[in-house]
Image 1 (cartoon, rainbow, N blue to C red):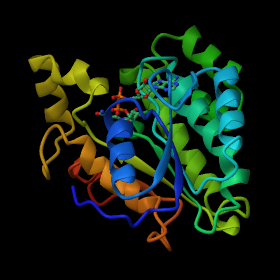
Image 2: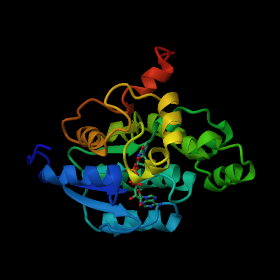
Image 3: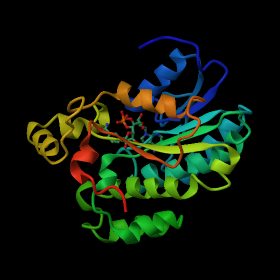
Image 4: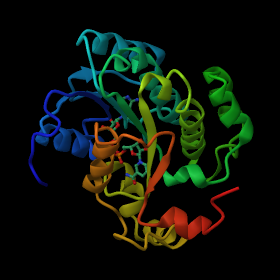
Length: 263
Ligand SMILES: NC(=O)c1ccc[n+]([C@@H]2O[C@H](COP(=O)([O-])OP(=O)(O)OC[C@H]3O[C@@H](n4cnc5c(N)ncnc54)[C@H](O)[C@@H]3O)[C@@H](O)[C@H]2O)c1
């Protein structure tokens, strides 16, 4: 890791800062001179459970107490708390709730972390309920039908909806029109506690590696590699990239979808 002070004077909010990709990103940002307000269930400057409305409001209120921010990285996710509640509604509430404060920065940037799981077939009714902001309906639909969540139990649905929400709002007046770049980073399998269920079982690991190969960089990837991309997308150096879902997955998305990417 190269140390420099290129981000001195910038203040970042990083959710999921206590572990994995969030912890790596926090370390990298601090190494480059940024101030980081970490948020996590525990072991962070702000402790809040983003799967609940109370936790989300508490994060937004506490961050407003700092007065100004320059970037928001909504990284908290995985399966520790409710899948839709954390991975979609928690991330969106973080970004929406902090957007007005962010808009006052001279170089405001935001990034949310999704997943290659967003590529899996997803129940459109639940994706739509997420996009409609109807948390009770989305959670209810998932709970009512054990097969509705697909292979990932609803995690992929949450990440699919998050990709769509970001693409929908990023070019609007509220975001791009306010000078805020808003992007998604969608990692493949990365060596963090969230992937322990894959990496700790040889059979599961082989199955996942076969169905979603990562021909560049290897299987699994490293959290530091994702951190580098998050750091750049949320830096003032990012002058022209917004509304993108950037797959940081060793080529998995390209291998799976091939050249069918464009309409
Ligand atoms: N590791 C992978 O293979 C992988 C792949 C694709 C996407 N991701 C995504 O990357 C992001 C970071 O995950 P990671 O791999 O670093 O896992 P991790 O488990 O190491 O870190 C996730 C962090 O989020 C926090 N968190 C979870 N639920 C929360 C809640 N309700 N409120 C506040 N904080 C909460 C956890 O406490 C933890 O510190 C997640 O959004 C995850 O879905 C990970």
